[in-house]
Image (cartoon, rainbow, N blue to C red; front, side):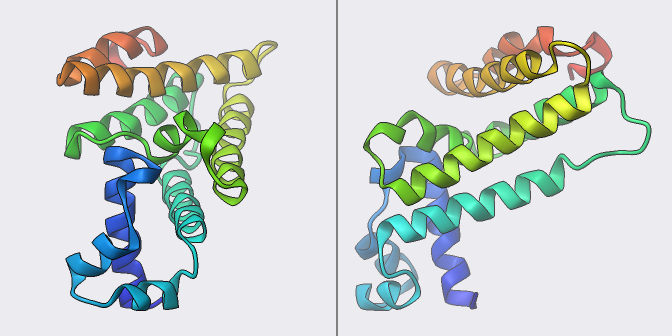
Length: 177
């Protein structure tokens, strides 16, 4: 993608993480970077296509950050996921993009829902394979629910400590910071 398309995706991502799918329009994005709305359509013919591309890119970046480490333990894996989620809300007070879209999934276009589902399935698969054990899938679902819920609580309270409280039981105390 070109520089303009990347910038449009950056803006769309920030707005989706702040206000969901309905939190951005092509007109607003175009105005913010000083181009015509038709130019946005040149890069992304539809809003759904743009949102799907943004969700896919977000997931790719996320999985680069949480990638396997040598000799990682179960606590290490969960701690890595927790740290990445915490950094997101700590950095700019915004939600996980796919968590935000996931809350709206019932009213979104299929191509966007597909990207959300792919992201969460990939999270569950990655976590469960790295956690291991007889209830790895259940534990992976628990981790993801706690992390996404922790973000919601931190945003609702306007306080990162709500995330810390909601997710503290996921990791050993040494990894909780």
